[in-house]
Amino acid sequence: MKNLISSVFFGVKNPDFLQGIQQAISNTSPDGIYAGDNIFTIGRNLSFLENEAFVNAWKAHAETNIEHAIVWRIYVLAWVAKNVLSRKIPGDFVECACYKGTSARIICDYVDFAHVDKNYYLYDLFEHDDSMVHHAMPDHGVTLFERVKKRFESFSNVIVTKGFVPQVLDKISPESISFLHIDLNNAPAEIGALDRLFDRLSTGGILILDDYGWRAYREQKLAEDVWLAAQGYEVLELPTGQGLVIK
Image 1 (cartoon, rainbow, N blue to C red):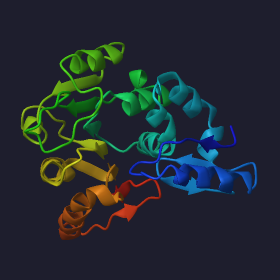
Image 2: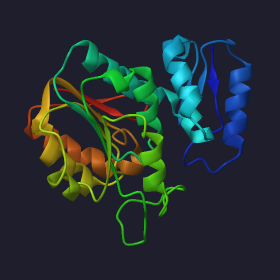
Image 3: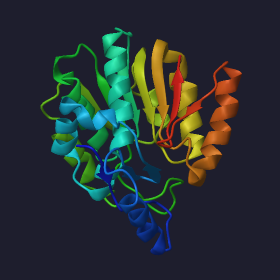
């Protein structure tokens, strides 16, 4: 696979934008194009699209146009997972919030997590009502929790927990963490998760903040910059919109 071209661009209201992207694609090199998830690049190696094990896992579990468009984001997570495992960083995996469990399921296949001596903790509310700070997603509903549990039923070391983050972390969470992915779509919950979990992130462990680089979630970035600076860290904003911290 040499290119990834998708029509998924968030916040775009003018249909001429996508026509412009297509016109630009038709006037450039036929290889190394990534268009989607608010990224448009040309002339890139896109090495992750040549990673057969990752691409197989992604194709097996990405079901929607969005899940295909955000493959670069998903690969960042997969790279982090493989990196902490290869360096034998102590601690479990944590994802707040997991939504449908798509990225976690891809990671599990990619690193053969069933045979990894760690647990993977997945947290989410799985439902939504208008009183909640975070916004609704299409699959939120009363059946989502059971669907996600079924998705991981073959993994005895994946623990799916329903509850409000950060409060639920006081009831069930690991003492040591190597991989920490936070995607809660609101600043108070993400700071609450950092309050409870960042000290447990092992030296060499990696934190990914999914919303860090997105203007729509700038409140999170501003709060996290202050919080992490107080701990002596500066977040690296990635082209995918994610933020990266290596402890």
